[in-house]
Image 1 (cartoon, rainbow over the protein chains, first blue to last red):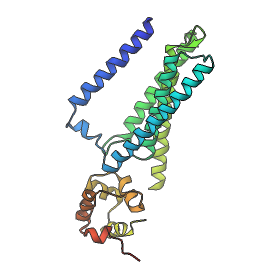
Image 2: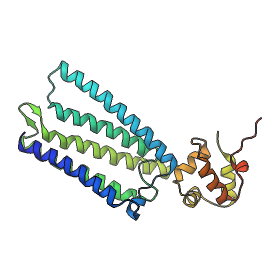
Image 3: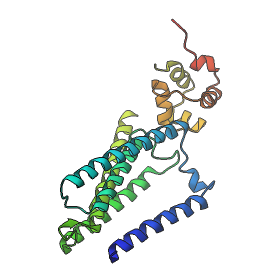
Image 4: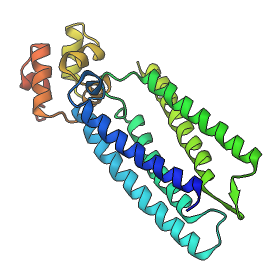
Amino acid sequence: MDESRFFFFMGVMVAFLVSIVIAFATRGKKCAAQGVLDERQRLIQGNAYRYGFFTLAAAECFYATMDGMFELPVESWVGNIGCVLFGCLVNVLYCIWKDAYFGLHSNKKQILLLMIILGTSNTLQTICKLTDGVLWENGQIGVNGIFPMCAVFFWFVAAAVIAKMVADKKAQ
Amino acid sequence: MKNLNLKAARAAMDMSQQQLADAVGVSRQTINAIEKGDYNPTIKLCRAICRTLSKTLDELFWEEEE
């Protein structure tokens, strides 16, 4: 395993552990209450997880078939992460459009800003990797292919939040 | 089916959807969905809405058969 892959998997593991620690540390506290959802939102989130999972399963099947039939210019595990991101995107977009993504006291603008920052940083990383010529490794999109995928993910989420805010304003 | 009784009771008390939502602890969109008939609330939420609007369950959520 080369250095970039090692740090990628270490980053994923650390992020996973930190999220668990934060979830436990903020249980029942004011910051956790901001994310409280009402009964309709919980119901919608249940549906969203289902749709996200089905999308992930369909995307994985499609990708596995394509990967088996053709020599795709992308490393297998990077393609799999793309499928996971696609499933997550369906989940998040469905929740946003059905008003089930933000808690009752969440600050939408703060979250939108965070998405824009993440989208921008990933876009910048993509540009850097492209100019450095390290997006492709041995003719295939390697570990650095994560950056454009994440950039697309965060920009889609940010666009959905903005579209929903505009639609809500019109509805009111 | 639209819940016009709820909409009328809320309007009679001069409350916006947001004010009613805040009073019963749900999002504005949830109140909107109930009024539009897109969401069937639990009995717990129905009772909270009735208490806030000083109405009975029958008055707000019972549909007369035609």
